Image (cartoon, rainbow, N blue to C red; front, side, top):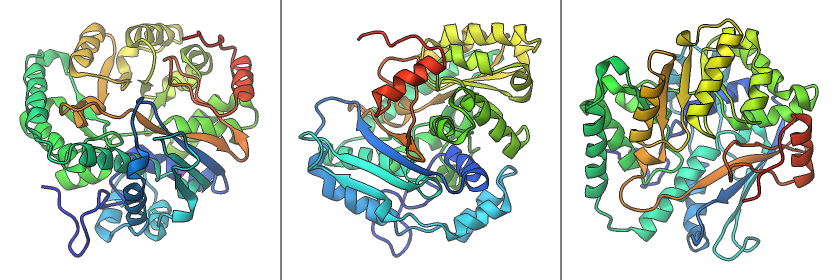
Length: 405
């Protein structure tokens, strides 16, 4: 059972490891290649009709508590044992502490019921904020709106998922992972769900993106890089059109073939396939799907591997876009025998307890004074604060204009 550290009050985030692994892998690249980068992130709640402003004082208090945490020696030892994390980076983490002045939390400047959360400062010191801050907002909201909630419904739903997974033919080699830290119902439920999966269906449970729970429960930590890394390279690379190639090259320079799952949807699949040439097809272990139709995405990527004389059966496709367990099984069966598949399930695992989960994000909007953007294959996921820059980005990458909703 999740308990606070001895001598501390019960706060939501009790360890700086309570975040996703890809934050550390990206942070190491920032330390080694872009230590002077300055960035901005903005919070957005995509769920309509949610009044977060009434909880702003509690959110602020939890962020204040987050900014008092430091990495413990056993946590640093756990990170140091990971083959891809370098000693100088872990030494840097030993000195790391969140700086409260880099994050502004305001309700007065936002529309009624909303909160304005903006992070500005050195990327190296901001990159770890996103996941714990989102987890704080989600848990504060649910413990205030559902103060006496019985997790019995969540346990029943989880058991039905486990029963479904048990019906899957072992030849399918179906594997699921947890990607649900940022929108979880609570830290306690998150860990309970992971422990249940590990106990009940260990042959189908690959691990978790959450580093703290992986350390506490002897699970495999999973992750490579996210959209913010690709977006920042729009400002950090030699020119905008080459920013995707620059991002892949820089990643390969840092990890030398390790952590080889490429994110495919920062500029849409067409742009990804244009840049993901034979060199990257051979170098990277596979790709991650995070927007658009997963079946079309997989078919096109398989054809792309064949075109570049690479056997797709040697590659791994990771699916992580708003997955449910039935959807993941359907995708797995569709691609069985043609490519290796894995599935990162987020909200449907960590916040499927009978209440509507919040769709909340914190996205990078600026790097080194320049707007940055993600252009998604899914409506509603594109986010940019500068429409002129977004139009220019579409032009540079040869992207079609957005379809009116």
